[in-house]
Image (cartoon, rainbow, N blue to C red):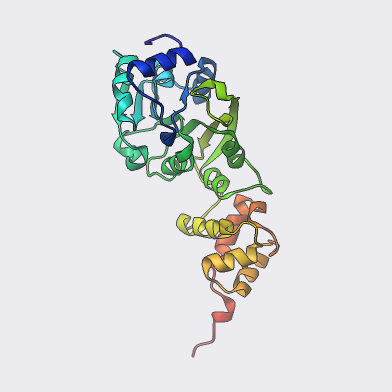
Length: 288
């Protein structure tokens, strides 16, 4: 298949040649649409100066296109059965390094020594974990272009009123946008859900000033832990604080105590984090 286009039938033949059956438990729906691949490549905006980390090389469909544009492609693959197939598919391609391993167990700085981008058809069951892994890494990518479930893309790109913990987590680190929708037939075997290509351009500076990032996300997680509850209750329970103190902080930040977490913007979460970190006035006595 080196240099040839994949189809469902040719992908099936290749898998049978290596006696491989796609594993649902590993989210193995291999991208075979050349049209979708081109949209991904265009969104990544690659040059020969770019280093790319690909998560889940699969059949190598995306990998060989990446290698035509980027200077180096580090293709991660967890399934050891696919390694011989990848070595055949990507034979004599000096720009590709195939790495067997679990992306969540490998730090990006162990793979690259400078700037890099992430381009991948992500297994859906680890989408959130992989995004957090790179966005929170010490060595962050400059851009991520990933194929994920359409509903997840909608959650990530949502605005105030439909925000989620995942949306806040991604938008804190970068600007997400939808590249294109992807039908089930773009994969082999076809999944039961529709997909979309998501592009995340990482911020050079965070959109809000936060003194303690861990504390910021502790507050956000507490707020979303019981998303159907009003903020005064979810934050009080999640942070183990008196309701009165939470209400006071909300009022100081100009946030209605009856609002729910999905209604807040990232800027409001940052204000609230700061407000909840300030000393409780009622605990401040006069000491002689």
